[in-house]
Amino acid sequence: MTKKNSPIWSSIFRRGHHSETREVLDFLGASPLFSSLAKKELRHLVAIVHRRNYQEGEFVFRKGQPGAAMFIIKSGAVDIVDYDAANSSTVVATLHKGDFFGELALLDDLPRSASALVTGQAEIHAFSRSDLENLQNNFPRMGMRIYQSLAIIIGTRLKAANAQLFDQ
View (cartoon, rainbow, N blue to C red):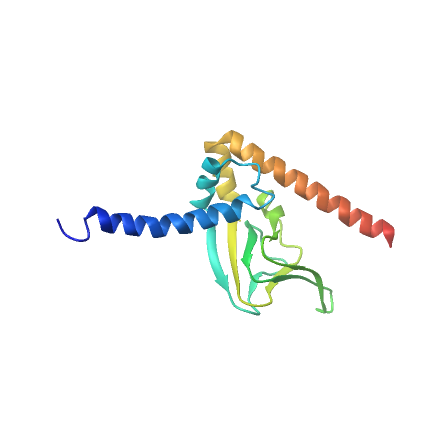
């Protein structure tokens, strides 16, 4: 038996992967979008969520680009920035660890309504509309719970935006 095929080596390599998977699983489970899912269901998400590291000043996406995914911040910060006709920018929100953005892209492919700009190094996880559609087809109850959470979150954000508009 060679070292590569020995149980001790496969156990060591699996353990490293397992702890990374557990970290992502815990991270996703803490998100309001996925908090209604069981651990078993979260494992399906871990397999399809994409992780990327961003540098300061890098755009996650720009206003006007087609939306195809939502993003969850694992570390770092992101400014949601809007630009007017004169190309002047306004920071609409600053998001941090655990916050997510771009969630409307899970529902449609309309252009982004603002830009997402990384303000320092950041690790961000992406979840695409096509992955959600595949989940819905393969695991209908799981997909339904994600869509329900998404509807509640969007409704809450819309109510908060309306309250701000009417309070001014």
